[in-house]
Image (cartoon, rainbow, N blue to C red; front, side, top):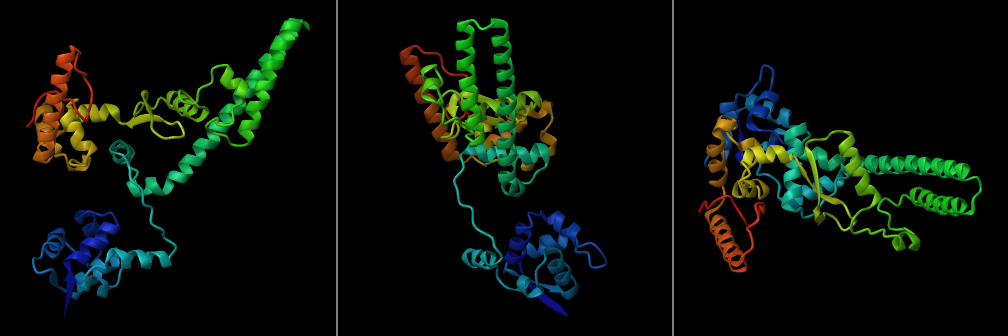
Length: 332
């Protein structure tokens, strides 16, 4: 007996598992194992439907967790799929990410092996753990401040200047404790006196300070913060890059190669293994740049030329780093 398998359906259900064709072949283990060439042949069929024997259809359906008839029919439309998933409690998460954040998701997957979907699903847990960690860190700092204040008052022997100084310190510590108990992560409830003393949420906040301290103590060499380029979020979180050294090594610090990564023209897993060595840096960079559409390369070259002309007229040195505009050379 033979069963028809719709090529697009097989691709769709495989994609939902985030499996490659090789991984699907491995998943069909046992006496009914389906070979990789067979899977490739099914998905590449030109008329859209492949006539497979029942054993193959059954093995694929079992591995993918669907019914055989699901593979025989065209894949459900996106709206039908969403409606079906909603019945099981799923909800769509629609947002737009900047290129740097999208690359960060890929770098976390590349460095730590955490799939992007898992990163998204675990994001609330990660955020809550970091938030609670920052509050605990602030509590310890307040305790240290209060101990230092008590010691200062003891050393001052009741002198009014020291009493007044410790009173101000204790007042600030009390306000900080209140902020902590209210889970004021970003210090938005700072007192007027704090602002009078120079507190500025545009340059720092407790949560951002904790993240940088945590990264330093953990010796997280794959994480780089850069507050010089402003805040990443309206709450005041610093801009960051995951795997900056790896990106630099892969792209050879070439801005067009980095652009290819940022804009998704090149995926880390797609870079050929034989181009990953240091000796192949030039070939690797050229391969990455070749993946950028010609219209984008032409636009970037025009922007570089325009910037160079403007800076030349103003007698200003050209920046050495600017992934979106400048580059190490002309590639178009």
